[in-house]
Length: 476
Image (cartoon, rainbow, N blue to C red; front, side):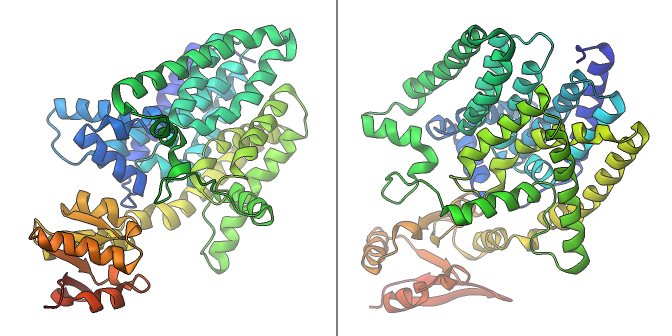
């Protein structure tokens, strides 16, 4: 292993700047639900919703970053600021990964190329362009692993880095077995105490402050709902574990292990074959690296197993939870590539990175930059021009955040009004208050909704091409 050197620092800075500029050269208009919801909370300085129970830190970090931009005169929407923040985090994570590899004895060129390979992977690249919480946790997870694998790891510092990952997303608690393994392997359990102590304090204090000053729960039930977060998103806020049968979960998890590299799902012919090959190659190299059974290989295997224990059981089909797996997989892949001569290793990394860059650019990044590929965004823009400024609009799915954020209209979320009687009662309530209610033609495609509204009262209000807007008004 090698210690941090001046050349290592320069490499990290160069990688960070290069990857950041690379990320900023692209723009995502995918606008995931959570990212837009966070942007709304940032603009409202709504700290109660910024300190989410499952990912406490991201909203606060985003709010601070947004305030910094506005100090320099920025007046646009916060979602762009959050997207840039994720580009910064993704670039920093790639730089830390390169330094981690240098500490583990990889050459400078190989470490730089491996960082470039990480940066163009489907999951890492796409979520470095989107406003989302996961790149913050991935950065701190990389920092924790980097310190843990050093010649003289500092347990308290590992605890602080790991706490940062958990505050980024609580799922990073699953790195604990790997970090404990590498800390206690030589000197025994006593090395775990400073790590666990700093981890506990660095996680507990922010949660305590968030609870006391932002969330301020008035009952144990409110506290429980806050801490449950995504596990209490049912309409009645009851607990729900997002699982599928094991016979479905394992294949979904295994498939996602490939898809983090390239998004071959939905492709046809040569594109599908190329995507699968590009995804399989680093996994094969990682398997070769894992076979070494070295201290580093065991660490990464325990790392992957820890995360797998959670994410096979919780939403194995969700790619964002697998971002940090790429750190372990690429570290193992570079171990596996040691079997090749130096020039062959560099050539393999260059070839894979170039091919994956072209594939993911063509099939993931560029399509996400085209607003035509986001019908929810098209619908929100149409709503802005076709519904009066003070109107209420019936919405579903991402429309719950798109309509207020991009269209500036007040939403009625149909998720909470699935029964016709409840929907009628809500519409009557708004009518009595003198409020107009609109619904887009696309929203009317929801199963059974058009029939419900036609029985209540529905008439065309605007049309443009295949876009329509309707006024919801009770028959007299």
